[in-house]
Image 1 (spheres, rainbow, N blue to C red):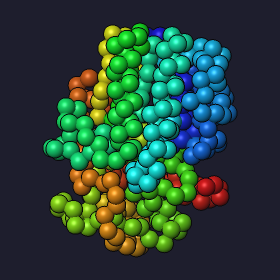
Image 2: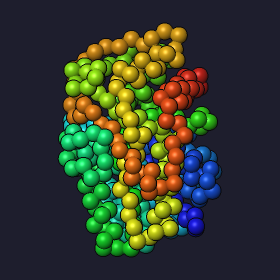
Image 3: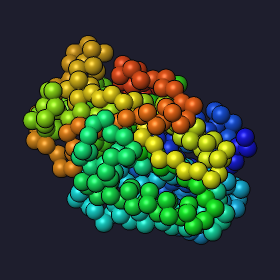
Image 4: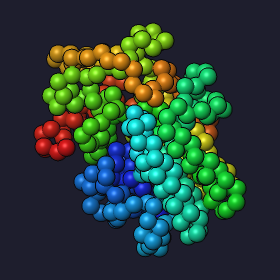
Length: 333
């Protein structure tokens, strides 16, 4: 199979930087575009071509395609905070939907054949059944999910009209860090539970907020399907290989482990790794949060030659905690 040069958008971000590492480890040529609004430059290896800019800048993107000989795109750039999307919906449609339209248009005009898209389980909203398979109705309950679903529909229509195929990969809760300590989640103001919790574990926060204790779940807190970031990006490489091998086909797949943990269960698991438990503050529900979001990953397992390597919650928490301690020791944000 030909290993085409890959452009990773948002490659200085949390998931994008792990994808860059996985591509390099597997021998793919890779370049990165990131506007560094939330990305971190030092997460991109020095030998990877880096372009600072926005994927909506068609002139820049087209130049990158030419300079790098780009044959495929992994598109991670965008805004991802659910509550913020409720407060700033137009920003989310601009950063996620309109910017993706510009990138996809440039890709079609430049003859790029393969597009791997970072989508989300938020396209399902509050799903009618759990575990959630890919056929469940797509009824997002926040602008973040809606903006991602619009991009999925653009990809579907573009692939029917032009010689480009795509994979829309619907993430559940991405967590953890590179087992080798090369990358992890960076940045102030994170709303992701495990990132917040490990920040509290190393003293960057004095507590963890638990948003909602009255959901219809076993312990009243939200239940989520937490997937290790390294397993997640490994699925991206398998998806890209599949797109190249079968250019007539598209993929729409959930990325998760098919099992859920509640907020309180995750915090209990982290407490077991620490000398003393983290202080918790119980708060009201947060806007846009469904109570229970767990994947069915049957399609993933049946379609791609992919095996989870870090599915144990202790692995996920341990790698996240090691990364947070590294950030603290180096005085990185």
